[in-house]
Amino acid sequence: MRRIRTALLPPLLAILFAAALCAGALLISGASPATALVVMVSQVGQGTTAVDIVNSAAIYYVVALAAAIGFQLKLFNIGIEGQYRLAACVAAIVGGLVVLPPVLHTLVIIVVAVLVGAVWAGIPGLLKAYRGVSEVISTIMLNAVSLGAIAFLIRPDAFGVLQGNNISTAPIPASGQFPGIPTGAGTIFGMVFVAALLGVGYWFMLGRTRFGFELRAAGESPAAATAGGVDAKRMVIIAMVLSGAVAGLAGLPELLGRDFAYTLTSPQGYGFTGLAVALLGRNHAVGIAFGAVLWSFLDKSALALDNVGVPRDIVLIMQGSIVLSVVVAYEIVRRYELAAEQRRVAAQLRSVPADPKGAMA
Image (cartoon, rainbow, N blue to C red; front, side, top):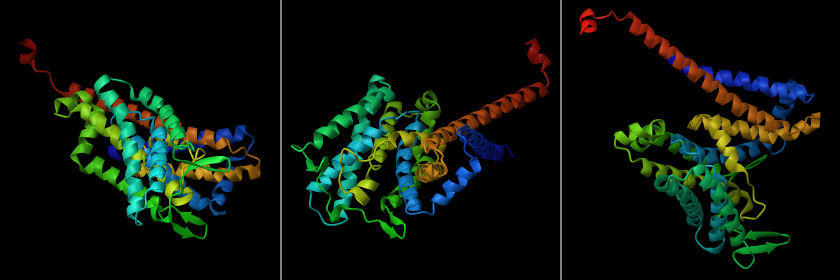
């Protein structure tokens, strides 16, 4: 019963908290929560909304997995934004320059993105392991550096191509593109399935490998893990490199499935959203998937709120409320279980009869 309560109570509380906070925000804005919900759900069947939700959820899922790897070791990789953008830029440059057969061309682009993300995240990993530099500070600074590097790389006198008022990399030919699945409501990115495979790999790594066990152990208690033979510095570096490698894939669904070039106006902001989705999913592969779909649903269905006079910005409040509700709910249950455990231990100690001989000794 205790396991069932621990597993089910936090999400139920989170749903209740989130529903109450979101309803309150809608009522304050002068809108009916029921009307807003009906309009948002009905929007899913309109136009390309359903496909857009799936495509965006895949991107959020990849970014959240990258964040979750760091969270397992209590590392806050806030540099995912810069890692995936720089990786997408360099991968687009390479993809536009090389001439290779189909499939091989796409694989080269993917490998380049992974390597760039891994190297860029490895820098703060090394600084954290050998100099004690906070990964939060170093990754934030590297975000700014990556933006400067991107601007330098796609200049017209470097690897950029001027197209009207916009600058982009050379277009990736058809041999390097990742084909999607056409539907009546749009095209689902082929990288959606890569994102699903990443989720399976993340689950297997954490629950079925020695490295995953060491990663979780080092995150729970670095001192105990070190005493057990785990190299803490090595784990920090590997965790950051893995996080960056996964982050490097986040820009590829749109790059290889829709845009086929990187521009200064390419989508951004996924890195910070992924941190929230990872928290929402409690760093669990399945939980992150639900969180990514929910976040994407709120993003895409918010367009319909304008039709009923509700500002679409209310969705930002709803998303923040949901994340806050999850964090608060799990913390409440954690503290309740800790207090219950302390009471059980105290009751057991009181039930043990005193040893007179031991007391006299």
